Each structure stands twice: as C-alpha cells, then as structure tokens.
Image (cartoon, rainbow, N blue to C red; front, side):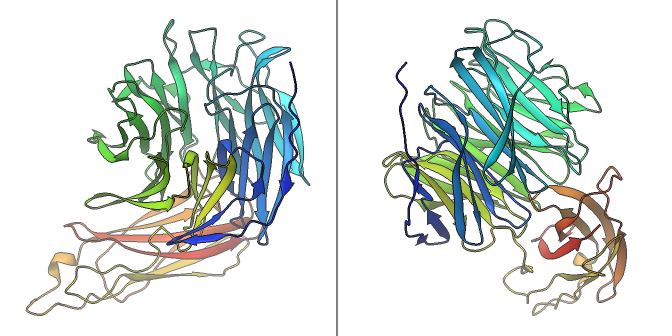
Length: 487
C-alpha cells in the first residue's frame, strides 16, 4: 500500500467574526474528519480528528494560541463515520480510536495525552475476537462524574452483522457487554453515549432500517431497549443527559430529510420535534448538548454549519459558517461559562475549522417575567470562595413589581427553585432542590464539595447555576456564579 506523506503546517489564518460566532481554521492541510471537541477547566478547546491515509491528530488552544497538531497514531484508511472521540477529565485529553484494515486486523485503541503533545497509546484488550472490532463504524466515550471511570461503546463489525458493545475503564478494562445483540442487521452503528450524575450510561444508536433506539444501564442492570424514532434510513444518533438525568437525542431521519430531536421525562418520551433540514450522508449528523436546563444542537444543512437553540415555542436555528461547504462532522460542547464551541470540517478546502460563540448561549442573566413587567429574578452568593472543604451558598428572591392594573402577586408566590453545580466541562455534579415563597429574604445551603453520590470532586473551577420558575407558568429566571475548589 502506498503511504501518503502530509505535512501539517501551523499558519496564521485570520479569525473571522460572523454575527455571533468567532471562526477559525487553526491549521492548513488538515481534513477535520471525525472531529470531536472538549474543553478544559480553563475553557480551552481540545480537538481530535484524522487525515485520510495519514494520522489521528490532536490540537488545542491555550492563551489565545493553537498548539499542535500532534500526531496521535498513524492510520492508513479512509472512512466516513465517527472513528475517533474525545473526553476531557481533569484537563487531560483522552481518546478512543477505531483502527480498521491494518496489518493486524481491525481493533480499537485507547489514548491519553500525557502532556507536550505526547500520547500514550494501548490496544484495547478484545475479549470477543482478535479483529474486526471498531472497523468502519463509530466509537464513543464519556467520563464518569467525579471519578476517572470511563464509559466506552464501539462496534464489533463481523463483516455485515455489527453488534454494539459497552465497556468501562478505570485503570483496567471490564468485559464487553452487548447493548443490542441482533444478528444480521446493522444493530448499534452510528451511536453515541452520555453519562448521568449517577454514573449510569445512556446510549442512542441506529438499528438497521427500523429507526433510532435507546438503552440505559441503571445500577448495573440494563433496561429494555426503547424506540426513539421509527424512520426511513435512520442515521447518526447523538445523545446528551440533562441535570434531571434524562436523555435528549438528535438524529437524521427520512433519508436525510430532517434533523430531529426527542427527549424523555419521568412520564416517557415526548413528541418528536423537527430542528431543521437534514444534512446528508457523510455529515455525521447533528451534535446535541444539554446544559443548565437548556438544549442546543449543531448540525450541517445545505452546505452550512448551523446552531439551534430550543425555546418555549420551538427550535430557533442560526447560521454559524456559510463559507463554502462547511459543517460536516460537527461536534458541540458548552463550556463552564456558557459559551458554545464547535469543531467541524470545511469540505471545500479540506480544513479543520473551529467556531466559538461570542456571547454565552446559556441564559446566565436574569430574565423578564413578560413584556409588561420589570426585570426580576433572584441572587446567589457563595462564601468562602475559593474554598477548601465547603462553601455557604446564600440565595434570595427579588420582589416582582406589579404591572399596571395588577392587584397582587399571589399567582407567583409558589416557585420551583433549583441550584446546580457544574464542572468545567459543563457536566452537572450536584443539585439542590429548594422551595421558597418569601421575597427579599436570604436562605442558605452548604456545598461540601461532593457530587450527587456523595463522592468528593476534584479541585478546580465549578459553576453554580440557580434556576427559578413559577409553578403556574411563565419564563425562567437564571443566574450563574463561578466557584473555585482547592483541596
């Protein structure tokens, strides 16, 4: 096989401001295929991707400058599905990679960035067969909350009869478990995984031509497979989990006719919602994120990269990048400050591209309760901050001024109040449910630096987010504060 040599050269490419987005092409001569993005505790973006017939690469931005690209592992094939994925934990980049049609067969690699662009690589022990695991299809990874337990899914291809497998890694690999063992169909490819605050995995995947399916493992026991969407030629499932540990799934349907979304509550799956026009084959569909009670999707449509936000009245999409054929392999993450980061491919120029919102997309300011009343909401403070063992969180509701002709505020006295603590990657680690109807009076809770399971979290930057909403309807008021935990 003839090996291609590709020199990756860092160049100075001017950054562009396009409406609400800051756009860059970090390097020349990179393809951006299978792009996956994460953020560090300092909200610096890390991106992994690959170049046809060359290598998997890692690049990250720090202090305003891009570092890399650093070669992770050579590859010698061309494919169109997700074959590398990234997770950030304690500011360390971790990746899982699908190696296909190599001299030793198809297998899956695990990599960890040890600093300075150097990666430690190991082949994942295969408990099924010595080859054919990971070929052609997708791999996904997500770290557990407050730990270094990783959850991994990958496909055992078996020449036309793929099966989706799940494993964990906390220094050693668990045995492979079948997520959806159905022979002779495409069961489990184009998949994605998310992990909730209880460290339980949620998995969305394509099931042959039957549609998009979902499965969760709770307390070590797999729950039954559920149908998310029955659709013609389903493709590219993406999943996120919210602060209530409920799943949100985005996918293409009807032969790429639409990008759709569906979410689950305690009462079951809610009706399917259309986000926008479909992308098409080789796009890796849409990337969904849930952060602070809000939902976002980055996706490719008609040659453009788009970003959608879910509102009370439906999805609102905006153009992020329209310069040529851009937006395939879109990967989305929301950082601890509420900014959106997207890694994606420029298909016209074969470039890796990166976009960051110029303002937070998560609502971190107080919202109005209707157009005829003044802004109001509530305040939160934390002391001490920084803290070592615990911090006292004080909150108070601000009185809502009555609008003209309104006799009383009785309809707004009973409210839902929630305080949530997020880590720097945007994952909720602790929540407090509060009930209050007293305005302008301080109340207090204490956070002792533990997660939802009572396990201590690591030192670093965290974000305290308060959400208030009336039980009888109306807009939600939110506010966010930064916390610094020093062990």
